[in-house]
Image 1 (cartoon, rainbow, N blue to C red):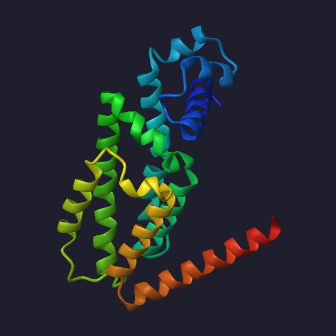
Image 2: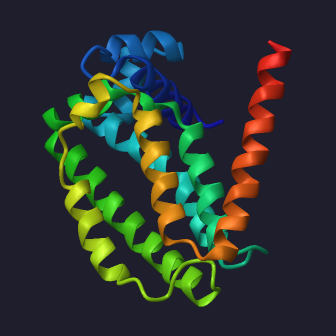
Length: 208
């Protein structure tokens, strides 16, 4: 792995565990086993490092969406697999990360831009699902897009996150939303997926 990529990965993991504010450039250099001088050769400041972290966070999502049209399966299955990839990134469960990023205007702008681009692709997948008869065709998906954009523009975390984890809130909203727009065919696919995940979770707990 190239050194710059290694440093970015280390920083991403630290931000995922502690948020941004509590992680110093010294912490990153120490954890990456590089000198501060080497660190600053790649990143002029903490915000430029954060920008690189944001790019790394979105890499697997962008690649998954790019390949979605070439994969066998419905639009619903594409979204379910995409959600799994999102949950594989622990940074999405770190509430401090989203609270702290407000302090970095360039990074916040980059995050919001990538969110809107990501949302645009999701809308394309939803409309594809309507043509495939896994999502209802009589829904105005443009309205859903506007509502989602409004939510994305709210950089302050939901009050729900003080009582529940970000992952719990995300999964609850995500699966209720999918179930609400699914046709009977789509619900069959969704129910089988949820049942499979339940069994996998139960077996994993037995192995602990």
